[in-house]
Length: 103
Image: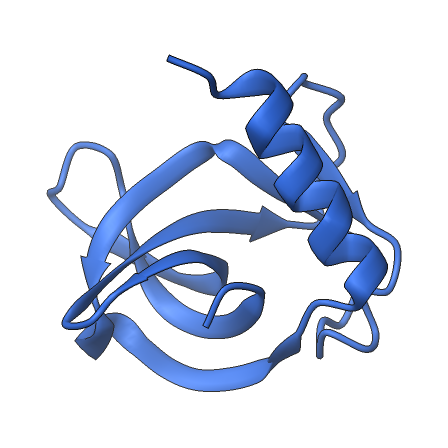
């Protein structure tokens, strides 16, 4: 599932509400998944990964995976699969995660 893009009910960090938006699956936890926000709003934060093959991933606009906007969500929030990341975008996401998210 790593690299799959879904339209989902992405929960706000407050937990009070959610918004329908694309999300990238980072880790499959069986009933749950760790997902990050995918957005077309350009920012250049250290955890923003531009998706160069955004059309192949089923996205409508040039997009960014925001690795600093992650949540653990039940798979029931997944409404529909859009597509998956290309090998190059998978490599970019994995590389940014491994470089920036060390404990």
